[in-house]
Image 1: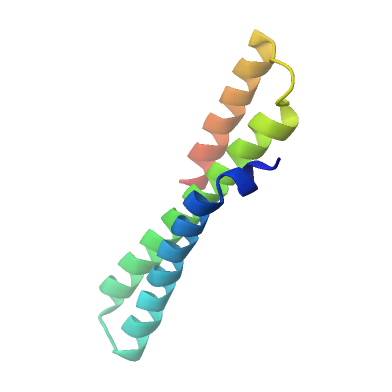
Image 2: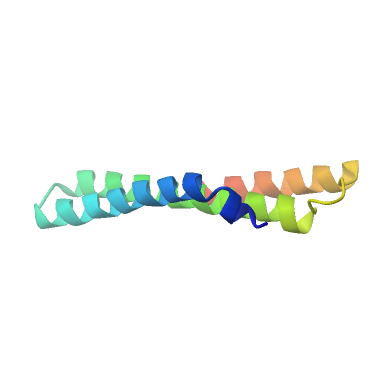
Length: 92
């Protein structure tokens, strides 16, 4: 079973939060808010999207790359963890 199916509610909650942030950007633009406020909201939205992306990638690596049915070797587990650290840093 895909990790996105198992974690559906958690992922949907994050997507709904992002949707609310995007709607907040729209309202800020319509309401002629100050650029600082708009940029702050865009930055928060970007961070939330990056977090969602990292979570989905991490689940994919753990389930489909390392595999669910067999235990990864210590070297494979370390390599996967290093990859995830790099991806998280890149997405910040």
